[in-house]
Image (cartoon, rainbow, N blue to C red):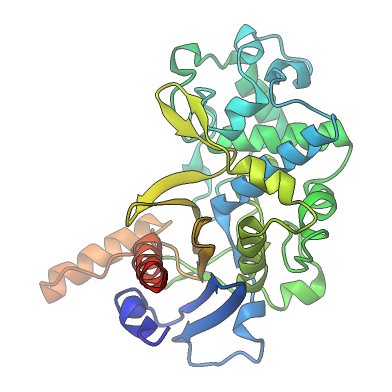
Length: 356
């Protein structure tokens, strides 16, 4: 895209260590673009650099559910309580695997016994299966069932259930059902030594380098690392009907009327220029991601950034307030990459529509 610089300039300014990569999928082809503010240039091609993709992981986890359902290993109608051992809780026998994948189980965004302030830099790493069991033994969100409540813990539970049913790790499930069939060789939770060499450092909105996240029992909610190459191929597969897992991907695109709105296995739905788009975003302490696709025009977009949209440290907040007091200016704030992605995707849709 000739004018891509104009779309990303607001996002890239004042980010000294930024690495932003973009994949644009259209006409069966993929185009890659990169914007780097770091002084030291990497020899690794931008499309092969690895990022934390955060909650885009939820799309993959939901597709794993559909793939395992096709093999009759599980059913999306199965009750959660069927798979949670050593816990007797009536509420768990009211919610299904489908409700976990569609965020309609009533479960909150985090478990009530999960205190993020214990480790702001790596807030999921210390939460154990024992903690999860303790939470599930007391959980009761019956009054919220059926309505949309975005839940990290819900998708974490789903990922854990799928692993236990199959006797496999999350990475083994990914490889079997998604990454191997689609030849996504750079997408995994746990990276090997070569992949770690391509794994970027992440930065808080202030520019401060922050640790990579360990998701522990939340792997299915946000543990995947990937590249713009792999995610662009993933989007492309969702736009095509002739790939090895097309039937599973297509099922994830079917709306489910739950409560008073359409929900999807993993995806969010929105309208852009009167076109239906399926999308998801992701964020961690040091990364931000966004992808979207429109099946009618067969176009899609992926954006990955090694800057977060928030600061994970109270000290960063106090530093920003001190700068404000000294300079009499508002300090630059972290912004989600979604706004940039939407602007670019809208331009793509407008162009593709005009070509029809």
